Image 1 (tube, rainbow, N blue to C red):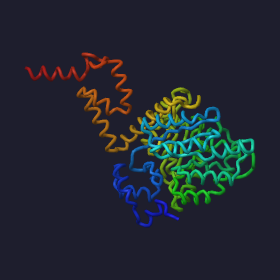
Image 2: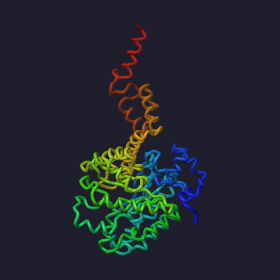
Image 3: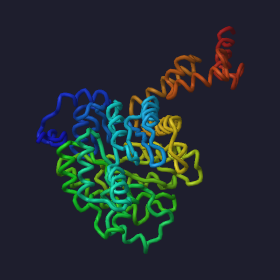
Image 4: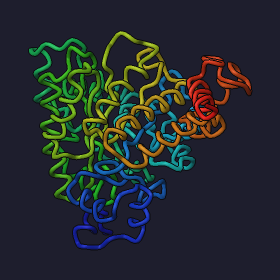
Length: 429
């Protein structure tokens, strides 16, 4: 069996492509290798050609976009248009979260079309099989589930979310320990329902060594899912969230020892003043592994604007060490996102990630802002628009509001024009 990247590096073998990747990520090859060897960074897409891309310490904060059909809408072409929208907005990775009966067809098309790493949540396919073959989502089959995971890895999926930390012990405490919103992770809820229905342990926890066997065979990155993440800010940092994180820390350690790269998924809904503390706690409990966050959303009151609530949380989370941001769209909590929702969600998450990268002192992030500020100072509209995170929107707004002339916000009182007049008057004296 071919060695995983982590195993190769432990033996002192550096693949030729790693040097080029380090240059692309603007990090020294030695620092990149050291971070991978310490479990603080993972590489996505290196075995499939979608990328490769680094998530973790020393590189820019990355952004993921979720797409995928639901049981109510399973239009393949629509999902491919969403993929294209995510790519136009420059998402670093995408995940197919389809829960439709044509899930395999959708995944195959996305894998063939995406130039960036692709992740999946295999329990969605297993839940679909349980529903269609055995009449109920909760009737999961452990062997079938493991087979689904291996088939997805063999298909060329770059990373998989696996809710290994939703254990029987945690689920049994749900009845006696208060929680406002219960379990809001779909994968976590399906797993918990299976445990309650069958009385069995979570197969991903019980047979974790078999999962590691598969991940090692295909050198697939495990994204250890946060099935107990808080779905209301009142539930943030509660017994279930922290208890799962402790379990994920142990599972990350076992993966790392095996030579399998893994990252940790995190909450969820977290009030703003607890975001930094939450990130630092997760890092501490999970061996400083790369942290992949949904948001976090910092308030529960903004349906229709949750791309904003999530971006606020993501910026603070990134500043405190989060490495990978999963976008949230304006339709979160309301419905399946549209093509435009996907685009807007990626842009909001990228703004948050970039703001975090400035706080991390990444030279490329600081340079981008400096160059745009110079263009703005010089009233170089073409360059300012070209440097903006969404040039198409910036160009459209300028054309609609100001045409080719002065900005209509200030007109003749533009600060840069006023200061220029002062300089000219001073020189004439």
